[in-house]
Length: 390
Figure 1 (cartoon, rainbow, N blue to C red):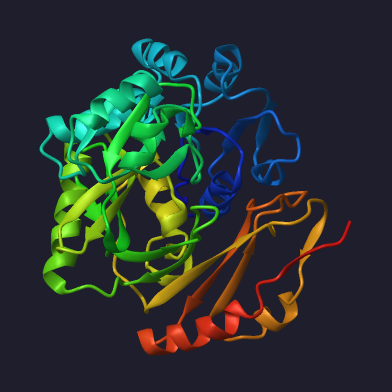
Figure 2 (spheres, helix red, strand yellow):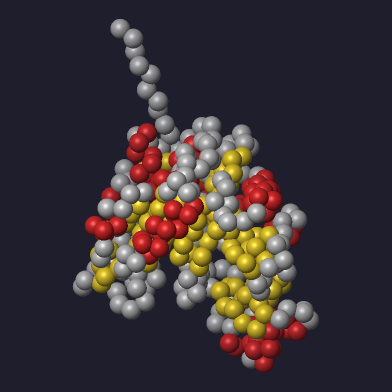
């Protein structure tokens, strides 16, 4: 009688238990990979799927140690964690992907911009200031007419960014709403914003996804819509992919890297930010690509060959966020109508409460042509109402 071989996978520990962790576990469950999570919220999205949930803070080194004790490989789904503990664990021999040194850079927007500068990665001109007064003094020495002021630490999902013209800051630097070190960059008027996802495995092999084009909500600064592939000339798409690969090579670590870029009015591509984890700009890969971003990360963590990054069909994604007014229990009002549309996939993250601009889910649209994608998207956009019910 022939024996069948059984693949034994290492156990993966995720720091954070939000929707990114949940979607990762959904993929991992297909291969019966054991996943542990650390999150202080007993009802976080990933809690319903994790094999083991450690209730604790992601900024507490002792809690991260507990996760490390029951996991073979560690990764994260959010940047605001205790990176010093991760570096300590790595020195002790624990496998952590990506390298925590990268997170140390990413957690500080000033260090992130200096990293781009040091590695000849194109980015908008900038300076770093320790406070508002210094920001005013340094701004006076530049030719910047308009700036994006970013808190070096603590910002996320559009928070921690302040746009202002030069004169208003020179007249009154107190309008800057952050009491921390600042990264001040020249505001780049742009045609569009794009993102490119890159995977790097432990052997140093790279896989790059086609560039996508994003729209942002002007109030929340969150991605509201994206389309894949991006509607840009081929030479610009190739340049964007080359820059994203350059970023991954500069980090020199296994992992998944979402590179966000500005396309200026002069057709210059400039790196805005990099997320060293699964990202909102690549949720569409679940249905639209042969290998989703979550499967690709799983392959990296399990030390497997990288998967295909080919597009199955043109696709788009719409974010579902809580309405500006009101908080509480909620429902997607037109769920049935959305679910009846062919090529439309609704993802609800399972968060217990809606809050203004809180990410509650997303919808992917997959169609045979980009024209059809845009046509169905118009229909979907009329059906995305989040209704507060309590």
